[in-house]
Length: 244
Image (tube, rainbow, N blue to C red; front, side):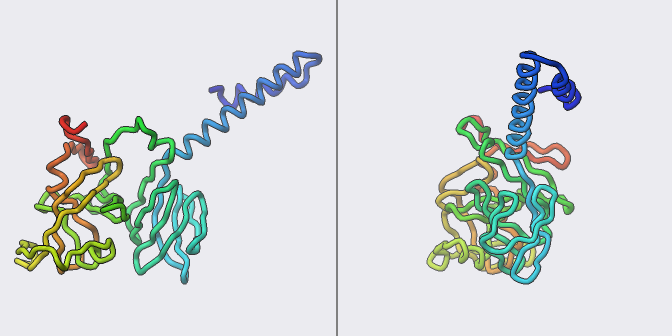
């Protein structure tokens, strides 16, 4: 792709005469068009989205570094606001539904071009200011927010979140769960699908706890079935060799 300076030089041939002018100006126009298309394609590949505040019934979203006040049902910067409840905002971009939490680190959303059939299933996460790895995901097709927790035996979520996700936890078998606050009663169940990025696992064991949790804890019933590689503040999750 030519540099802007090269494009400018190509455009300057408009001062010439005859057929040469038409040919070179046409070439310059095509080069400019190609550059715009390429830049547009890069912009559509990935986008950072954060929920940074509320203004009445509207949400203050930071989309690609630009603050925007968005009402429910409105679309700005390719992002549609579906719902604002308390400290959460549910948005949609390129067919993906995401749950954003107020003040959380920006969520990087892949564009349509990044989700082609040949896309990698590897997932790379960056630690937030507290050193935690937090990412959006889906349980049985419904959007939620995960935090990687290698100390959790199973995927763990609150009763409130289980209710929101439509899980029939009340009729699930009872168990005792060890938490930082001691032993608490819990319900155990199997999740049909858990998706984080492009990693999708079926029949994942989970625990529903009475305590309120800021995120769904991505525990070892999921993590033990993928490969993890950590490099400082970067964590990479990828399918195990046998499941590729």
